[in-house]
Amino acid sequence: MARLRLEADGTLRLPPEILRSYGVEPGTEGVLEQTEDGWAFHVIRPDLRRVYVEVTALCNLNCAICIRQVWRDRPGSMPWEVFEELIRQLRAFPELRRITFGGFGEPLVHPRIADMVALARTLGVGITLTTNGLLLDGAVAEALSEAGLDTVVVSIDTAHLQAYRQAGLVDGLDRVIDNIRGLQALARAHRRLVPRIGLEFVLTRDSLPELPQVPRLAQALGASFVLITHLLPHTPEQAQAILYDRGEPLPALPGWPVPGGDWLVWGLARMPRSRWGAMRRCRFVEERSTVIRWDGGVSPCYALMHSYPYYIYGRRKEVTAYILGFIQQRPLIEIWSSEEYVRFRAKVRAFRFPSCVDCGMACYYAAHNEDCWGNTPSCADCLWAQDIIRCP
Image (tube, rainbow, N blue to C red):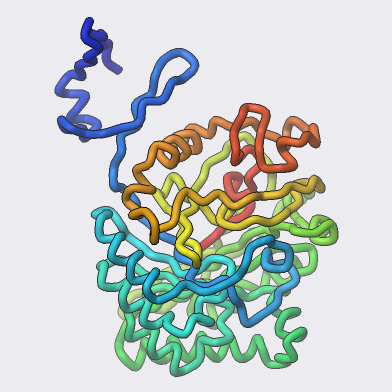
């Protein structure tokens, strides 16, 4: 900390050691924000590191627990020209490390998904794809592998088993497992260590008995990790199926060996928190991520990319999509550097929101994703910030 003096002409001179320690050079721009007892200067940097891309909001399944059952948004798929423009704009971010194809649709439904992966790979970044696995058959797997996909996360849980039955796919799980094994056989045939396989499992009262079996399935499929997440309930019935804050700890899951070429790595289950607590942190903001919706809309996180209801400890709330701009109308570097987005990220880093769950009042603000501190939207009772809900 350094003591500074404001000159008569309004100049505030920073010592050279402060400039060096924060990597600030003459001409650096920032956003000045008034705080309770002073001012905060938020440096504007092109430091985006991860982009989540929803290439489609369409899906080949109809899972009962999915947001698509209740949302207020129009579904659609990203035009190729919009995706090309996105990749062009991402070249303005020198710290970009990974692109994740996901969102609330099934990426493999998009007819040009392999072309999209290949184009994204020209940025020299890692590529993750989240999928239900049904369409990941031989031809698709070959195309994605050739395109440069390095991580695949497949959803396997009770909700998907129910969706298979609803769709008349009595062999749905077997098909998904065969597709995963086929993808790994391709990697071995080409002497590749990628794509790495991960599984995603949604915890509910119905799926809890299956949880101890997950490490065995992961080992059998050569998965290097399993992401365990609690349910985000969208209906009163689903609100009765949650497992967090139930008073009983989740069973500890063992690790498992995963062959990796000449090495043997250890697979791990990434467990969620199961109690509401004082620690709140946003992985999207901390990891310098953003989300691009299928229509080119830019949102700070998955939780705010669409409009939908969900239940937080039995209380219904309506989320309205928070879109900071569209890449077809304004370059992503300008949206990322805008005063609104910079202020929002700073607020989330410091987590300047009340805790609506601890308050206990079912007020108008909380019901509409606002809060009594004047924040719209509010992260006051975000289950992602509690690590209760997790994303790949």
